[in-house]
Image (tube, rainbow, N blue to C red; front, side, top):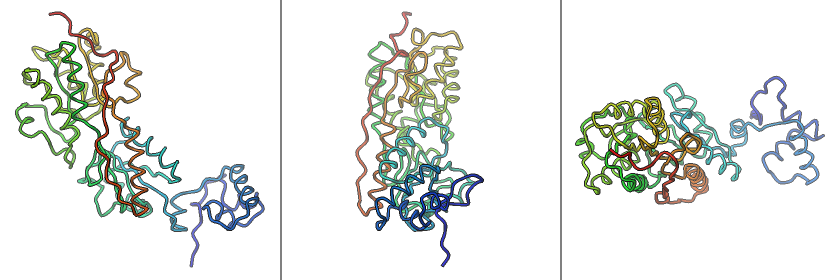
Amino acid sequence: MTTLPETLPALSGSPTLHDVARRAGVSPMTVSNVINGKSGVRPVTRQRVLDAVAATGYRVNPVARALAGGRNRMICVYSPQLNQPYAFEVIHGAARAAEALNYDLAVMVLSESSSSVLSVVSQLSVGALLIQPGLSGPVRPASLPPHVVSVDGPGERRLTVDNYGGAALAMKHLLGLGHTRIAFVSGLGAGGLDSGDLGAERQQPSRRVAGREDRDAAERLRGYLEGMAAAQLQVPRGYVQHGDYLKASGEQAARRLLDLKRPPTAIFASGDAMALGVVHVAQNRGLSVPADLSVVGFDDLPIASASRPSLSTVRQPIQLLGETAVKMIVELAAGQDPPPPPPFPTELIVRESTAPPAPP
């Protein structure tokens, strides 16, 4: 039987398992036993090997280790857009939990060309964390590991936050400041939904977006609509625009809203990146935020507090979602059946981008 190495072929100058063995004065098998946490190695020898690993800068390749010994301690993370700050924050939390539990994390960008690699990585993983995926694309159930947890995506084990409650908090804040002309930028444009007649949104509060039912975006829209209704305010035509959570879509929505005959005095965007796009367009038009236009986001990404003005937003525990997903996958791999937790609470963070409307 052919024995696979603990590392993939080394790059020029990269230390190998044999380099560690020579430095420690032991056999490669002893180094392998220490790295994989096996018993039967004397403490003094184990320490000598660990010192040699540190001195050489040797790094274990998790894929090769899984192929070699069948010790599967890898979790894969799939996301269609790793350039989104939201996905980065989820992965940051997942990485922290994986490190604490001694698991490796393999992060992959989803695309049609990645399907073959995805299949291989899935076979080497105990589970998968899906971040905002659409199962109509390259990720299909048959190509996934046995244990799957999604964040803002489809599936039986799905982690989410109180999106409706968060939107209600944002609306209560804007209404409390005295705003009555409040517009909304949803995330429903991720599936190509055009801005149009608001009546369609009331009839279909939950839409299919990017091959999945985007319940999160729909719940934030519902929070906006019900907030306006509770205040006995009509939503003028054109006051609901649809973006895709990226800054450019927020800029496009802001241009449409500010071009209206009676533009809003406040805009609530269902993502921080879109909200910052709104701020950018307003400032480029010579408007003061918040003196002329109040803006509220949703997420509380790191950039929200660093922007000028700093962004009032709805905070959701993004990193905690990633941490919880990894812990659930590890429990599932151990034969347990943890139920998904209830939606995580959201919190309104008031900063500099909101103020009472200017006098008429």
